Length: 467
RNA sequence: GCCGCUAUCGUCCAGGGGACUAGGACGCCGCCCUCUCAUGGCGGAAACCCGGGUUCGAAUCCCGGUAGCGGUACCA
Image 1: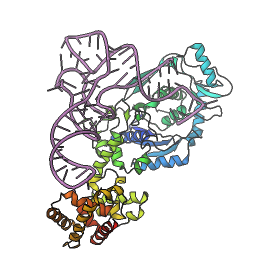
Image 2 (image 1 turned 90 degrees about the vertical axis):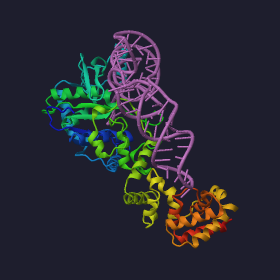
Image 3 (image 1 turned 45 degrees about the vertical axis):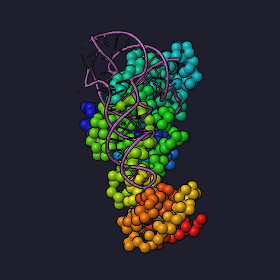
Image 4 (image 1 turned 90 degrees about the horizontal axis):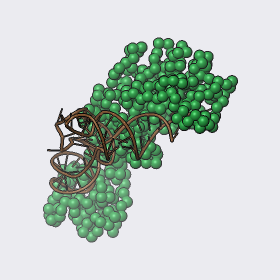
């Protein structure tokens, strides 16, 4: 990775705007910056771009930081709040005004349109210096600004096509393209890694940077190198939004995804490991991550694949760790009593290979911890006359079983199937419905053993008496 | 409209002039395992956007078209 001669350490930044929750796209950008910084032993700066006073809120800031923490991404500096840097911004703005790189302009959006109608649609707006109004950056008439993008190669923007951009409002407050440039300069950022939607902004920022440097701002610093990441889309190919599936990190968390699985999955969106491997620990991701391997194509967020990957991580982790995570998940998702249940750990163990997300645990095994589920179809199908007859046998066998662990339960039930000449399922399904209320549960022997003899018989009796 | 980016299985990622009868993963289909649901194993269907050009040879390089996306704010 090339480093600037003016800096011996790579410095990258993640700069979310607190106008909403942290989106999956934003999280991917954060992750890529984090991976890059860790891979290159560089530094990551967190900056909150809150210059849009109307849409930014402290709640959103807290939410974003909370999401980053949940994803277990850390940073070396910040959060720096852009809004707290207005003094510096004013100073820089004045310097550009003084040096003639910027000028006051009262031109409105309508004036710009009219200008283009006169000069041709492809011709950028150029204003005349006035006494008041907004501040525009003076774009050089000749030449072009070339973005040497680390992912896309060179992209050339002819100055002819660029409007003189407004960099400060009439009230003096600065705008995004200006604040970003000055902040990157001051923070001595060496590499800007962000979404492709910023590619078109880059020449403006480069122009601000050049003007600032020419005006004596920034000391020995130089403009950063840029890398524009392909955008992330929803499953339908359209922009990611709340309308389809989980769109924010918070929703992913509530859906029971594990942060390490989310990191793994997100890393695969727009980046290839180089050797076709898909399951990569965070350590491996850090070791392998290269900006050069980042794809230029937009990617779709596919929750189905995330779910599969999440299942891989769920199965791979130690059962006691999964138990602890499930306890905390249940506590936060409306089942605090189950979180404290001493049988939870065992219930988790017998469910581990059957669930893909933390949220899938409760529907599968919750009946073992609290009460019966209500599934009329299941009762109708399995607790009819034949089912109840079988169940009566099952009751007797279980009541008289030697012990009540998985093995003895299994032995007792198998004996019934043989004696009555039934297929295993014909014995197990009535029992499953009797003890859980539904047709889906962890393994029947394990489930019965977990319930214990007393509770199992109680539930069987209820089923036998019900019809 | 103008400016820009992108284009390989349904999706993600490989392949970057001959090793391509285009590889891996998810998903899908079939079979096996099996007490439900899963897991696991085996097998299968499935793609180089279109048209020109360069070349002995193009998925790969060039041009054009088309499509998708982004920008075009006194938003970020």
